[in-house]
Amino acid sequence: MNKEPIKTANPMARREFLAGSARTAAGLCLGAAGARLLAGSAAGAETAPQSAGRGPARSPNEKVVLGIIGTGGRGSGVIMGLASQPNVEVAYVCDAHRDRGLDVLRNLQKKYGYTPRKVEDLRRVLEDRHVDAVLVSTPEHWHALATIWACQAGKDVYVEKNISMTPWEGRKMVEAARHYGRVVQCGTQNRSAPYAFSAREFIRSGKLGKIVHVKVYNMLPGPSKWAPQPDAPCPASLNWDLWQGPAKAQPFNPGRFGGWGSWWDYGGGTLSGDASHQLDLTRMVLGDPPHPRAVYCKGGRFAYDDHREIPDMQAITYDFGDFIMTCENGDFTPYLAKIPQDVREGDKFPVWPQTSTRVEIYGTKAMMYLGRHGGGWQVLVGGMKVTDFEYGRFPDRYHQPNFIECIRSRKLPNADVEQGHLSACLVHLGNLSYRVGNQYLLFDGQTEKFLNCDAANALLRPEYRKDFRIPDTV
Image 1 (cartoon, rainbow, N blue to C red):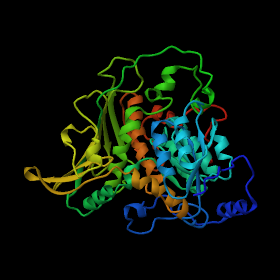
Image 2: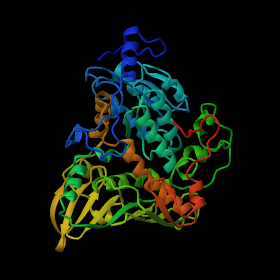
Image 3: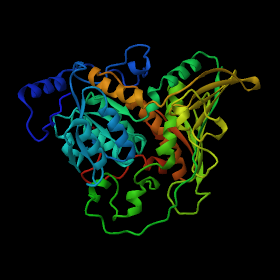
Image 4: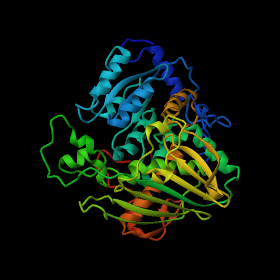
């Protein structure tokens, strides 16, 4: 691999410019937005996936140049996984906090022999013609706008979950990906797990019988101590205005910055930050059903009287017409635990009743236990007899290569933005039901609006700040 620095500040060489222009201008027709998502080669596709973007397929020997936007713990891990793929280099590390991402820079310097450029404004990354794709791993309130801006700039995108803040935002992300012909992979990596595909095939075979009820669990051990903090002077190392981005302007507050997941301005709580994985995996193995037609959430801060905006317990019911799905989401159960590492990387199964992040699928013939992130699956019949099973492995090893492969092939990735949007809406519907007073909401899947609640519809489109607005037409 070429160890020389990528000279991002200089104009492109004429040959590189012409090649990049040809990739941008050439047209491969985009597949229908609602077509069935198929697995990529990393997980054993049944047939070749649809084309996702413009331009001819690229040689595996052609370098893919990336930038990372947001350098939290998950993003730092994902970028190093992407950087480990053949003929991939990272040109930019971007964070609104100048002291963040330094570990990533050091790790990349060790790998490449040079230090990628560090910037605080993602627009500097998107302006560079050398950059083929970006990893968006910011707090959730930036996901949609950063993805749309990247698509408009001709970049492919890997965007972390939960990919959007509302159904309206998510739909604009889909429209931008399709209009600009971009590959947009969502950070719901279970969609690249081989055991998720085999679970889907088993259910499709009819051996569970008719699916009647599905239970999704996200019952976490408990939160760290939390208390409201007073506003304070902003550190000189942080561009607070840029960090807030699309969210409404607030004085700097260390609690908002360090604990953004506790505020509706920046995310969707534990339902968004954690249960989103199980909800997406469940949709996948069930064959990706469309939107539910109704939702009801009962929630509140029952365990901890600490005045946080997000609930510490939610019990959500989704009406899919011919089956019911529930999601129990909380963070007060220290006697439950996520799937341990030895299960994720070995031929083992978790102790299902004590697993925080399990899924139970009930059919008329049998039931399935399903675990995210390498938990595998087991099928049980009468007498608790296990009849079928498959062990799992943590799916990053399949998901990240799938993104790079699709940048080159222009195929739809395993976690394409269309399905990412539909899964993210399960989070949004549950939270919106809670936020309008635990109301039963009827949802029109065609218009992606509520039929019986103006207050919920009023929350579908956030009030963006000037210079950070998502337009009606992307």
